[in-house]
Image 1 (cartoon, rainbow, N blue to C red):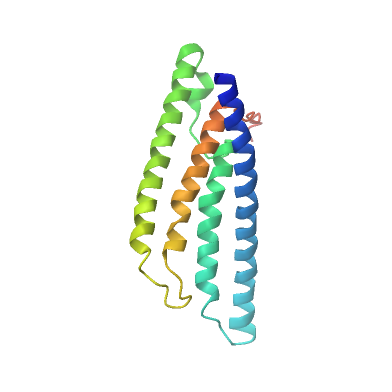
Image 2 (spheres, rainbow, N blue to C red):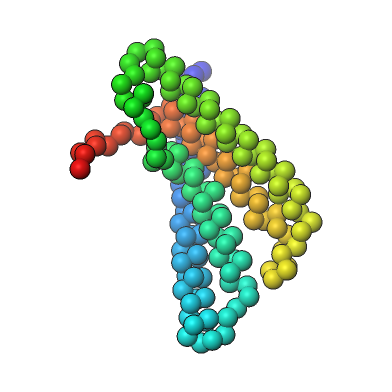
Length: 167
């Protein structure tokens, strides 16, 4: 039963991590394109657009909150891992579980408060875009759910750590 659950979680993770990677990269590409567009329109053609700045901000927000799942899955967050490096045996196992629980609590709070923010912002309409501000804030709970899956998958199947060459 545990082997089936592990396999299922890792299969779900492969799909979700691939999906958020694509969407995060698309949001990054959109942000870069919009930033270049803004520069050309504002400083070269002297015809600034009002819509490009808020769309650029939303693209960056989605890139960050969806991309955090990819970062968690790859174990690429900056960390102080001296305890993990020297921990052995049961202490190492307990430490990994403690870290997992702490991260899941943090992501659970992100989900909870992000959902509350999105619900409150549902009635606020962006003055330039004419859409609900909920669409910006919903990225927080959505990203936290994907990050929870990635954290659990990284716990079940950790990514190999590169050797630090110093220097």
